Image 1: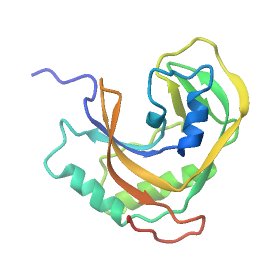
Image 2 (image 1 turned 60 degrees about the horizontal axis):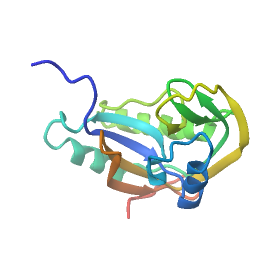
Image 3 (image 1 turned 90 degrees about the vertical axis):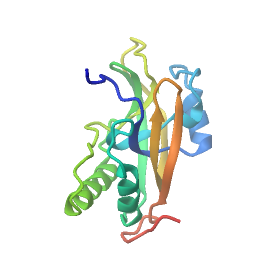
Length: 179
């Protein structure tokens, strides 16, 4: 049987902006207003397609995240860039977000879990179609990532299914457990 080219139910670890910031981003002239503002996110890690995952995979990821601890971190985007999609990006490195990803990768690897990928460039997609307008500076948009979400993205339905939320410690190193 031929292998599917695109995931149907990909699983991601995401950071989503607070509602007021999502509304602001959604109102940007280059944002796709056909998609709901609550779908805006930054992918922190990508897992397998749940449609093809082995039995118990989702529960394994959830249990793993229950014991993961990390600190909240700031994000600040100051440009819109068009590549294959139109995205929010930053001219300064996301050092704290990269540190979060490093801790996550180290944690999963120490526990023998290797079925994840870290996106090479952190960004927020505001239109999945490229608009051909190149890059432009914008007034900075930022927030502190205070929780991470395990999201199943239902392809073709523009819908996110939340499988878990985990608070991040308020800026101090330490352990936080999902509520």
